[in-house]
Length: 119
Image (cartoon, rainbow, N blue to C red; front, side):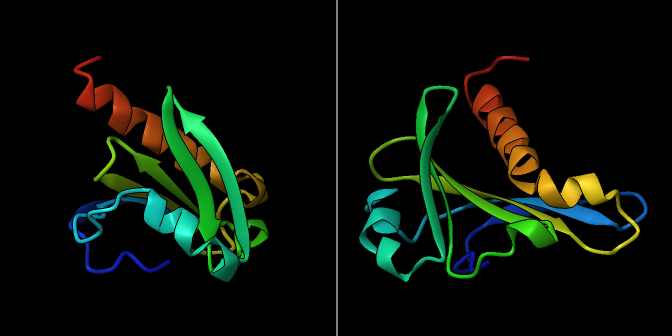
């Protein structure tokens, strides 16, 4: 995952078996269109929406079956954030490796709810 030095936060599981991070891609003023422009460089590229916001699962290396997933979510035409889930050790549930994108999506949905002021 390349967060391009973007500001954000990371949350580690209590047993350090996994982590979730959210990074705001503020240097990219073209928003999610930057992800579309470089889609030929990505190992996977899957457009979707998160609570009505345009999003795309993508990364230059496909490590989803190993427990890593990157999801980019646009909040407007010029700003998007990256939601990343990573399984850090083999001690975490093997189900989390195959559910890495669902977990990244859950974190992204929480960000959207927070932006909308929904609790």
